[in-house]
Image 1 (cartoon, one colour):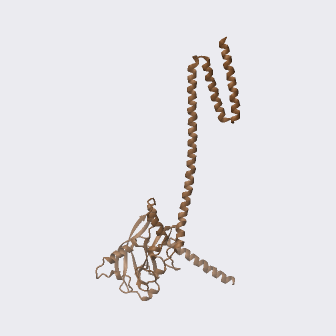
Image 2 (tube, one colour):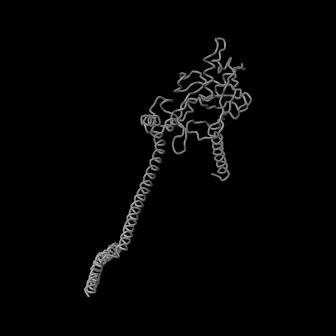
Image 3 (spheres, one colour):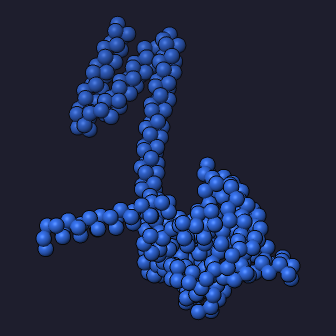
Length: 350
């Protein structure tokens, strides 16, 4: 391969990765719940100004809960679990979306049966209903067909209510038809949560629109094919990754508490010993005071008190020196006191 061709290939490669990065960054989140074709334009409510959208039908693929395969339908309902794994990503709920086993739902069910479980965690793991639409922004038609992903309660709920409460001659249910369809004029309301703004549809008006040619069906997306289904085992692994991290943190916290408890016990024992020593010293001070009061008693009792004091000093030395040395010292002291005592008696006799 020539250097010129190699450069062209590298240029195309870097251009593709740059587009991919730009599109994902524009979406504001990693697409862990949707599989979008390259170059997909995403529609998003950006302010509280009213918008006019044409919602277009598509030919249904497999698994749509509200239409059979091959029929024309206007949306794809799906459910996601939010805040899953170390990166807090969103993943398709296998149970609510596909009717299959879902590890997140199973884990949440266990927590629900646990009276000590965190209620906020249980609530956060509940699957959220969302919808996908093929739309054309009538004020920005140059972008062509755009993909709109929206929480059901922020738009779909109001749309369902308008269709459910229509009069017989309103025909609001035909809004997505290629012929005799309606443009939806959406009134937008700004709301705030955790310091961030988000937008909800608070009113819907149905306006007549021009008919679309069937060729538009070649431009719309098959919404059922855009769901990114994470297999059960892989999703379980992602979920438990967070649980393992939490368990490790709990183990570290337990070890830390154990060390602190041991340190407190040790400090408590030392404090008790210090208190005992203080009590002991207080007792000795009382004894000294009593000795002063007994100075007028005969000298034998004084000498006995003195022997007691020396014995007390020996006891203090026993705590500091090895047992053998203290015994010798103690014996020597006793002999010394005995001599003093006998000389004292001889003086008395004289």
